[in-house]
Amino acid sequence: MRNEMELVMDAISTNEGLARVAVAAFVAPLNPTLEELADVKTAVSEAVTNAIIHGYGNVWGYSKHRNLVPPGAERKEGKVTLRCKLEEGILTVEVLDKGVGIEDISKAMEPLYTSKPELDRSGMGFSFMEAFMDDLQVESKPGEGTRITMKKKLACGPWIGREE
Amino acid sequence: MDDFQVMNHCLMIRLPKEIDHHLAGWLCDEADKYLLYQDVYHVVFDFEDTRFMDSSGIGIIVGRYKKVSGLGGKVYILHADRYIRKLLELSGIGKIVEMVEDKDEK
Image (cartoon, rainbow over all chains, first blue to last red; front, side):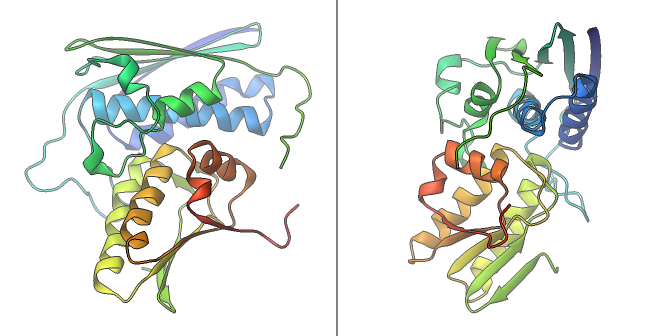
């Protein structure tokens, strides 16, 4: 089965949930395991969150009750593009932004490294993407943007339970 | 706010269905208000309702851990399903928090 989709979203935190649900629905016809689905959703969430927080600098989320953007802080405009492709059981996810880009990719990918330590971020974003997908490519140019490409083979037979 | 409760110097936080960056800022701010203004030593994160978490959740837990551990407080994790436990182990914070096991674990 072959299928493709593209979703262009504003770079605001509301759309992290949208991106996850879109990818989950996109792979649903392959009948993935819950484990695979959770892996893909987490990886997509990390990539889209990175684009929003780091690419465009929209660090503020929104609460159930009120807007948490502090007075004076501006919402920065920008789009995050999510592209998904399914081909022969392999899911390819691309997350693109036209934000600030990454100066030092290998440093950004170090576990626990975060460029915004004041924010209660764990620095595990890229580590989770690497752990949950089979392949991860990061291309970035400072000032131009970032492209994350992740691949995962789905529905590769019965899943064997993880040892507890 | 019924998601936050203080009992016996413990701050109990009932986490939402999905934990990501979208809600993380609000959760941290609310939790920190309790840590600052009430008599709280320990923090309990209850994952009963939680079906999704990403690294933002790890950030919330580590951040609160840093705040309470200096005074000898502990962080407890309640009702974490297998997936959430996998995230905690992967990020290495399985070692610094107390995992409370479910009795009726499948």
